[in-house]
Amino acid sequence: METVNIHKAKTTLSSLIERTLKGEKIIIARNGKPLVTLSKIKKTGKRVGGKYKGQIWIAPDFDKTPTEFNKYIK
Image (cartoon, rainbow, N blue to C red; front, side, top):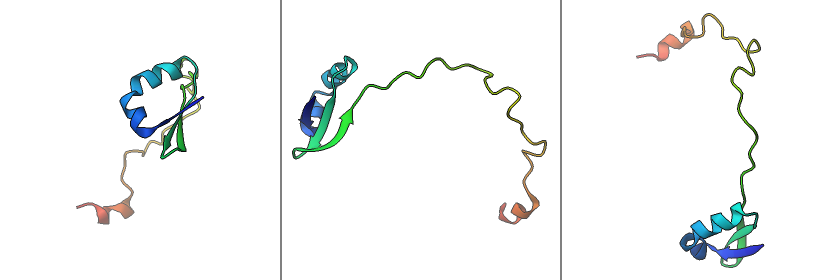
């Protein structure tokens, strides 16, 4: 695990990202104090359309503005 200051991180961001994608952990610091960790985003899997079919409904009056809101409409 390597710690780099913000200035070095800005000038070498592409290489830091490549190293992170290969599994290395990088800490970015300000004045030697750790602030954030660069890490690879884990893939969660493939999205599936229709996963919640039949479980979600929309009320028939969904698009109607409630009458009490009319005083706010100009």
